[in-house]
Image (cartoon, rainbow, N blue to C red; front, side, top):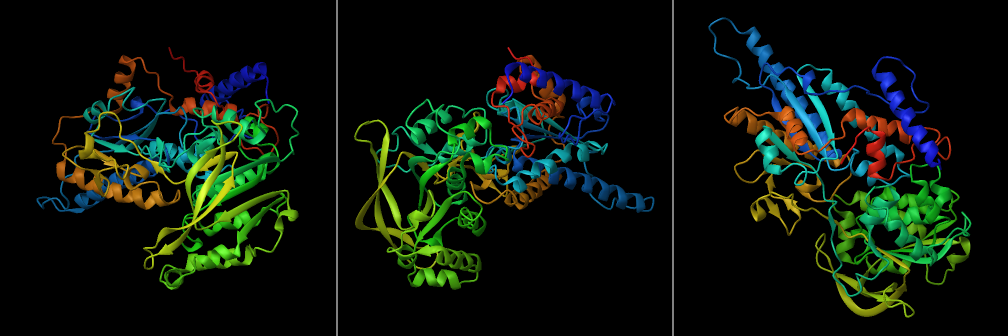
Length: 571
């Protein structure tokens, strides 16, 4: 890791590198991918004719995809109207109804100084192929701003509801899109012991190992759980923790956290996992159990994540996946068989085969094959979390009841059998779903469904007479992969296009970007603009910070340091 003096040198070099590229002196920093070093502000846009102004709240995948497809739809509508009307004879009626805007200006507002949302702080660090979508998002700034009829701008470090009121945004912009996700809270198990020390949500754990600046404190808890001490200076890097970890839930996130714990420092050394995280993980955890209350046919994980667990030992991570053949059979009732044979059963059939190929019987003794094990358990439902006998405030085990399946195909529920099994646990991670929360200023139950934890909407149009729309998880709930947001964004864009076609510019002309800039200045809020964020990227990828040539970046973990490198001085 770089010293404080090296950090200051990196910061200075980052700013000098950025300035040299912007001014045309091409001395790019080593290893740094800086695709678009241009500053676009309101001065770059033609305001002599009315342009559609759009504010997007949230700089994650849904925000970027909505910005991309909305700009494309508006520009296509302008081009289509111009082409058809240019070809009509004099005196003929217009080929299309008039379109009230000559262009589009999109402003993406993000609470954090950095964009990309879950791609940066949620996607597993050993999935770089997924994180590469960041380059596509960054490219939107040049693609959009190279067209005189469109512009895209970034306002990082601006929290809607705190730094700028939602109602103020609605008054400044023609359209406001809510795309801030469901990362504010977690669904709870609602069982005794859930608040014991050492019980964390997978959301918190994932944010920590991805270097989220608001979750650094999780490292202290993980350190105590894995090593039983806050001082691990004498623990070797390759030493495997004897701690037992229980992950509750069987979605892809649950399998991700189990894999990260199994790989440890050596398996993540070439990723963008922060070095401070690797120093805590060391050689990984000796035993991780992943619990599901239903059977393997009903599991929410995909075959990609499952296959990665089956390869842990072959890839040299000294970790073995354990599947109990008896638990697979317990879940194979007539309804489960019908689910595999149904029209949508092919992916599940492949998972069933992979699990059976990897399964062991109760008489096998696979523990001798590897120092670390990951156990995928089925038909176990936690009923309480117990404290350690020696420490009443710290987690010690998870009490589970054996379940059986009842109900027809695709409608099966887990029912208790009365059989109890207690799993020892030094760390418990709950992965049963995220919850969205309303923004301050939203109109209660009319605009937010607290039961489903999503914004009330129809195809992305927020209910009521307003200019609000929603996209991504806050629209549909926390489901799907990064690519799922593409069709979701297109659905919202269709609703926005219908809205602006039907309403036209019937309301007062909006100030848009200029209005936001004036508002933030009046409220002494200094945003992180796109060129400021690029200075942060330059610093994160400077070779002086990296532990090896393969590491993509060493993330900056403090917001104040990000602001300093970006040249932003906040009071």
